Length: 86
Image 1 (cartoon, helix red, strand yellow):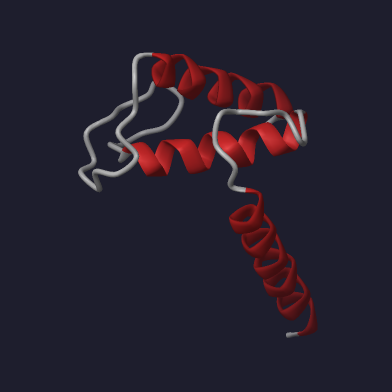
Image 2 (cartoon, rainbow, N blue to C red):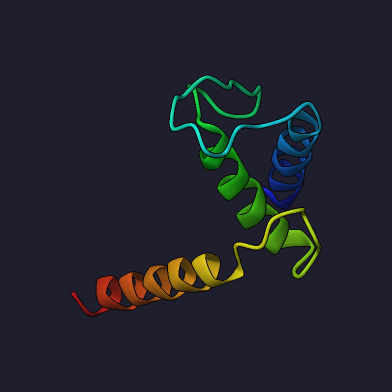
């Protein structure tokens, strides 16, 4: 995805979030134009948080997933390093 597509994705989810996303229900019941499929509220909030970190790091998006993002980022970097070695 381009940086513009990432920003559009984050803003689309944020707008949907203004209507309310149930992050405690694992049911995949939300759809967005930017991605194919159905998503749970927690899926979308996680995607939105990660997207905002790409173009507005540290921006308050209404939920703090900084620890989870840091763990996921370090695992991703580790996997990339491993792939380069093989």
